[in-house]
Length: 218
Image 1 (tube, rainbow, N blue to C red):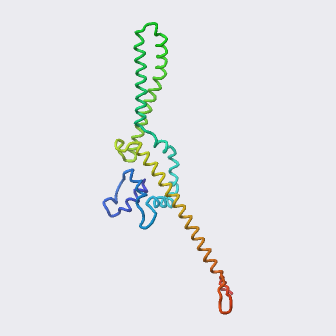
Image 2 (cartoon, rainbow, N blue to C red):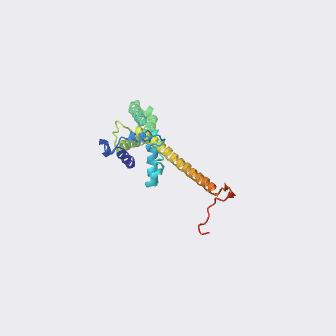
């Protein structure tokens, strides 16, 4: 993120936006939209090239985000609805237990079964509710970490943006590597061609003359 901010400030140097201290998270996806003049190179390619030269260890940052794809599929609203449904279901069982007390001895076995179920399930539901609260806090913390308002830029959007960025970043890096390899092969081919021309004999008025390099000491 610091490198992206540096690139942005460099591009906007001399303008009011050239001294930014932060940026909106979704701005990182716009790196693929800004291209060099008459070139397929984007700011994303430049970022990858810059990191390769200065901080190559950062090129594999996606390896620290192995759970990102799975996290991007989470829907906290749906989880909240399911959690509430479980709580309400348990409350109904508790009401059944209370209502059965007026049935007398005929419902003793039934009440015993319900009570055993509530004792076991009640602890599980309380643990589930506590876990959901913790998940919600962590999700909000992620949005805040990137300087976003959880109410306007929720966890799902943050995870989706990061996942998309990782894909675009890795694609740009792979394209950079392919370009480097293509340029290497081109330079090698040109060097071989030049060397071959230097060794090719040329025809003179006396016949063929060898154009191969000669020692200046002979």
